[in-house]
Length: 382
Image 1 (spheres, helix red, strand yellow):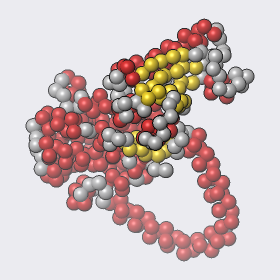
Image 2 (cartoon, helix red, strand yellow):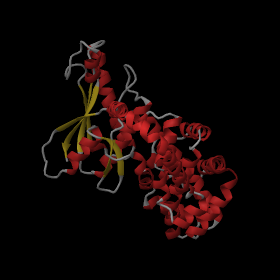
Image 3 (cartoon, one colour):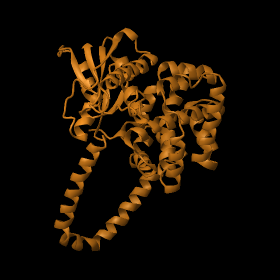
Image 4 (cartoon, one colour):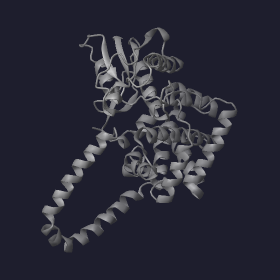
């Protein structure tokens, strides 16, 4: 199981494809090689700045506000359009510069200058690049907030807990000039202080050891259950096209990926039940938190271009059977339309809806009805 913070930089940089880098180089008027180096530097540098800013309650709350206002509708489309000269680009540049002012304060100029010197680009180009990438990172973080149900404190913890992994992606001299090497010193001082305290606490801790171990064991058990309950047992998967996703172990994306990459298993049709795809009551409109599920499926289908599938909708038995049948068909059609709009070829997908006719659990309990209200992806060709 991988911790999502170990992969944030890689996940973000995966969206900054060679095509995006080409557009950025043209937009900035810079050499492509230098632009690629700057891109790879900008992501961990900004994440380091965000994690340092989120180290206080005030900073974490302010960053959370910025993240909640960010656009995370389609990260691939957003990344592709980052460096296209239009009114939206100008607006994003201004928003990005404001973001840098908020996070870096009076250190913005030295931050930009240090990166420009490190990668060999003009300061003005680096400022524009950081501004654009900064707003994109906010959109990416919003997807994580929505998917994991994070609040300001847990988002801050997500960033600060593994801030060292961001800093390690930067050249040592640059990390030092940006002021991101003081975390290790602070940690060392804290270790020394703790060591001194232990000299007189150790006897007491030995007496209380049995109780502490019992509490820790209970807490660990509860934490594991909560992680599973909230879908946070995550695993990193690498797709054939090099894209990486953080997915729930044993969940829809995880199982679909394992099946599609296993060339030895040619059994079709194979059914996969969406576990985070929900609709508004008696409607084909997706709930906001379900958008990530569709986005991740788009990424997987792009990586396996020969795969064909059927989307099937199902309901519980509450309400009129004819209406339920229509709703189930509308929902499967809605998911297909979202996939097609994102570039998945239309003839790779078919749809059907069965209403309440194919329950997989009892309709006599709420839990059973919840299981029956589902959408399935049936792989018909690998």
